[in-house]
Image (cartoon, rainbow, N blue to C red):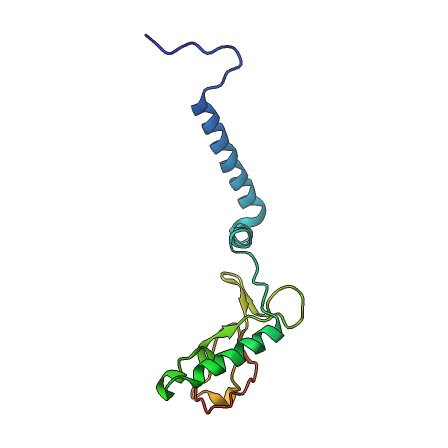
Length: 146
């Protein structure tokens, strides 16, 4: 007993799958030759990871005040590793719908500026980051040394 004969106009499922795979490969090859790998990489990153919209400045300031209140309840040793000292925000200060960009890297893409809560003088060693570091200068009424 063999396989049933196909009627005129029917396509086997396997052939359909092969056709779809071939079409996808063809699209990828065309995209590679037209835009190179950098264009494909950026497109895929934006498609799956999106754009960092950034936090509103007012919200970031309120978060910092909240982190300060939390840090007050910690011991001096724990305060330096608190969210007030360590947490940073990506802020959209120019209201363009995207967080402030510190630099653009051909490999990593956009590297966003890190905004920290305390004034720069609060740190025993200044945070550094290739995208740039800025400070919201939110003082905490408790003496916290980051």
